[in-house]
Image 1 (cartoon, rainbow, N blue to C red):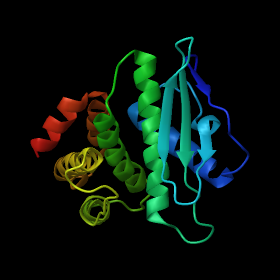
Image 2 (cartoon, rainbow, N blue to C red; image 1 turned 90 degrees about the vertical axis):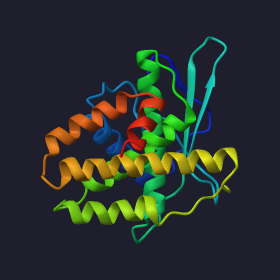
Image 3 (cartoon, one colour; image 1 turned 90 degrees about the horizontal axis):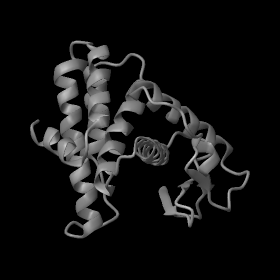
Length: 210
């Protein structure tokens, strides 16, 4: 990535997490038909115990964008949905910021969160065989209905995550009604690409229209 550099501190840890992050990046780039300009694994750093995923950005003195993606470790045995979702969310943030930087477009924190909430459903749904309306509805319930928040409602962060959850939930319901039930997956991918290119207000408006 010509205008992005790694921050110091990357180690050799998180081998499995980097591998999963790379697969998620490839999946998102294929669906959204994006040009690869940076490998997410080069920007990953291990978090401390209890840390959640976070994307750190800063502008260097020369104007370059510096990027670091902190990821939690995956459990060593059983599948853990929260840890997997954190990695998907972090990679979604990375891909979105990199693409917006490449095309000279600005983004907002809420816009990032809305897109990441949609991307969690997209990546997990793509891993299901077979995938149908019932499986999608069950996944949607786990991601958007049976959900807890680290930040209280009424706070800036609390409201941001709740608005993002509600907007993504509504959009995924639209996808189910229009495309999943009829197995119109090619058209669904086109709609997902259109959503990816929308800005914050358009994403929220689409969610409210559900």
